[in-house]
Each structure stands twice: as structure tokens, then as C-alpha cells.
Length: 223
Image (cartoon, rainbow, N blue to C red; front, side):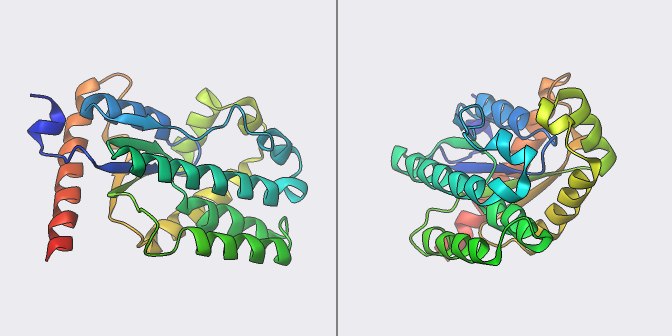
């Protein structure tokens, strides 16, 4: 019996991993997918035509980057549900508008017109009864110091060269975002409570919590 069967996690579940850069979303995505025998869905970074240019000039490329991410994540969300579920997804579509686009608008690196256009498009595409929301959003959280250490150790060059003030701003905004998020059930996990690199067994207590969250939410939907 595998862990998915042991903890009675529905095989059509879709689990999304959220959290700031450096928090370990990709590692968690791979570990959960392997343990549950689910497929993975990773954000497309290597072929992103705007990401590197964005890190060099926020104001010039922020709108282009956000529109690109919105389109790619929307297509991926649709694909996962059409496939029939059974996915663990690295990063959610909700973070784009709730954190990144909003931050650039408030800091002046996205014009009011671009922000209004982006927000209207997001609302029309995502915030409707027809959009397939995931069964669970797992929010990985940790201290700013721990996250900066991870970026320094394992981050991409463009992330390592980004000013610390940017990551501090991101960390603060993620905290504010998750505290008001209500589009789907949430499971918050501290990154210091497990070590998926050195202790493979630390995934099981997380799966037990996932099972409780998903099955509880599905039970309430039936009432």
C-alpha cells in the first residue's frame, strides 16, 4: 500500500505548492508527487522569454512577465483538470496577482493602466465559478534569514544578484497575501519542520495533514 492509499487521498486531487522564491517549492513538489504517485506540474522558467530581462529592468518588463505567467498558468490549470487530476503543481496562479503585479504597481514599476489591464484579465479568467481551483494549496513558510540562505546556496544567478531589499519586500507581501487568501483550502507548513533532502521519511507527516485537509474540504462541499 502506497502513502496515497494509506491516507485515502483521492487520486483525482490537485495540490498546489505556494511560497516565495527559495522556500523549496520544487523539492516539495517532486517529493509529494513521488510519494503519492502523482504527476508534476512545474512553472516554465527556462523558456520564459521575459524573466532574465525582467530582473535587469523591472519597470520595462513587469507587465510582459505577468501576462506571460498568467497565460501559461491558466493553460496548465486547464490541462490538469482535463487530464483528470492527480497532480502536484509548483507555484499557484493566485500569487501572480496577489503579490507580484500588485507589488510592481504599488512600487511604480508597473503603470496604473497596465495594472488595471492585468487585474481585469485575471478576474475574467480566474475569479469565476467556472475556473477549476485546486483541492489544496500548501503554503511553505520560513523566516527571511532561512530563505536568503537557500537563495544564496541554491538560487539562480539572477536571483543571487537581486538586492536583499527585494526579497525582504517579497517575504512581507507573501505573509500578507496568505493571511487573506480564500480561493481554496490552505495547509501551512514551516520549512524547518521537515528535511526532504536528508530525511525522505519526513514527507509522511505532511501527507497525513494533506489527507485531513482535502477530505475535510470535500466532505463540507457535499453538505
